[in-house]
Length: 354
Image 1 (spheres, rainbow, N blue to C red):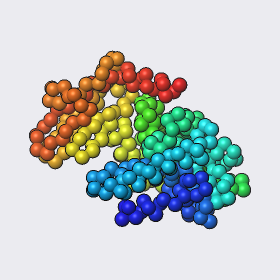
Image 2: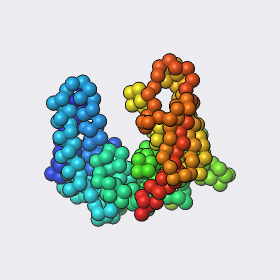
Image 3: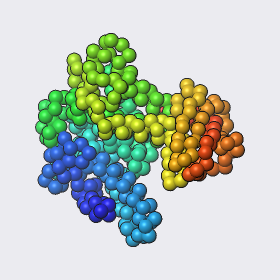
Image 4: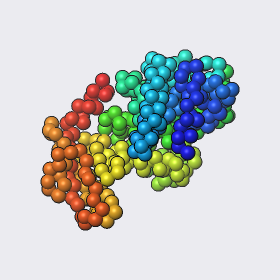
């Protein structure tokens, strides 16, 4: 089934990018490729990620031919992304059926869309210098610190001749049309975490954390929805900036949980290997995680040493010579201590911020 789905997705337009059809992740852009010629830049990154990831599964299943096909298609796709998706300071979002770019500096509306930038990082399909530039542009044009939101795109669709689909039917600044769509906001934070910008990650998480939208009576009146659950969207339309939309949204809650666990706290499991690579801010002196694997409980303590030294992993007091822990199914309580070099993390942040 997965092979058929991937092969079905290997349909490309004149720029060598995947056909968008009647919508990709953003189903509100249902007319961008309605005639069968429009292409999606975001889908190119997403497809690249799927191809490279599935190649590993195919190899594990001894399907060497399909693994090779996946990697070859991914290689071509990355070349076409580099050649035809870059706009100068960020990645474009798509091409309409007639070849008009979307998410370009040439556009009056939707000049920049966040998910092309974040997935250029998360997929590994973008060139590093372009991905870093794109994320800086997201920070510059889409992060609204005054109202605590990260917009999906900007400016919102309104009066231009562009007809991307029913997204234009939303009031400018509402839902996908220029508001915060929380899935995408979380992908932004995950991308900054993947780039190693710890302080930016914590700043943005503090910005969109639902709890922080209810710290004062004024904020509560502005937000208007429950501050203890994930919200699908937050408005950016004038006079309603910062107002929550669809609350109790399980999709955003799932991504938020994954972000906190894997990107912020850095806990990631691959088979029987547990990797712990936090993206914690320097202000955190220490934090702890309890992780249960089968009948084994791992008590994990991470300390920010704040010295220019190597990161050390201790398992039951014994220093490990590898960057992961081999999980055991029935080993009782295990103590993991990680002494993290915060100084090196701060240097990485300085480099990314240029």
